[in-house]
Image 1 (cartoon, one colour):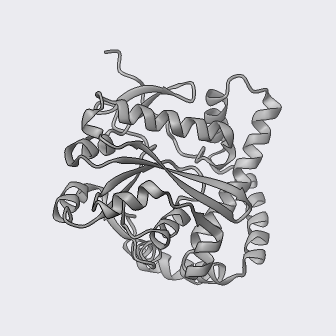
Image 2 (cartoon, helix red, strand yellow):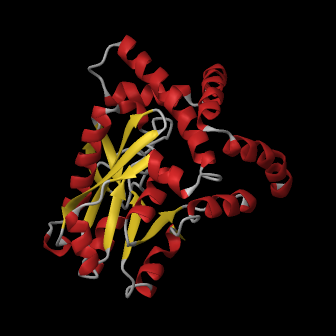
Length: 289
C-alpha cells in the first residue's frame, strides 16, 4: 500500500519540482485556495495565533491567517523543489552569511550544536549551510512512516553533502563521529514530552521545551549556535548564524534552552507569518508541580 500511494503521487511531485520558479509560485497561488476551501487545520492555526497574540484585533488575526496559509503553500512547494534544485540555485535562493568566528571554530577543529525553529524555509537552510561552510552538517530528524517517501526525502536532504540522523540515534552518531568537525542541527521548537521538558512561557503560553540540544552541548562541550532564517521576499532567504554560548558547561540549568526560545520568539514576533502555526505546539498542559 505504501508503494502504491508513493508511485501515484511521485509523478506530480517530480513535475512540480521541475517547474521554473515563476510557474511554481503560480501553482502555489492555486494551492492557497485549495487549503482555505478544505479548511486544513484552520482551527489549530487560528487558536495558536489568538493565544500567541492576545493583544491583536480579530482583523489582524485574520490577516495573519491569510499570510500564513499563503506562505505555507510556498513552503510546501519550495520543499518539493529541492528535488531538482541545482547548487547555484540553492546558493542564490538562500544566501548564507558566514562569520569570522565560524571560520575560527573550524580552524580550531571545534564542532558545535545548531538550534533553530520552524521559521522560514528550514529545508533550504540546510544546503545553504553545507555549500557555504567547511563543516559537515548533520541534521537530526524524525523519519517518515512511509519508507518510499522517506527514501525520497533522504535523497533530497543529502544531495549536496548534508548528513541526516534519526533522532533516536543522535547520541550514538555524535559519539561515533566525535573526531569529525561537525555542526549538528536541531529544529528545537517541536513539542516536547511534558514530563521530561523544561517549561517556560513562549508566545504568551506555557510551553514544554525540548532540552536535548542543551544536554548534548554540555555533554560534548560544543558551542551553541542559533541559525536565523529570514525571508527577504518570495522565494529568497538569508541564513545568519549567531553564537549563543561558546562554553556551554559554564551555563546554568536550562539557560541554553531558555535563551534559544527567547531568541526564536523575537524572530517570530518580527515576522509571524513564516512560523509553523498549523503544528499542534501547545497540546500538553503544564504539570501542577
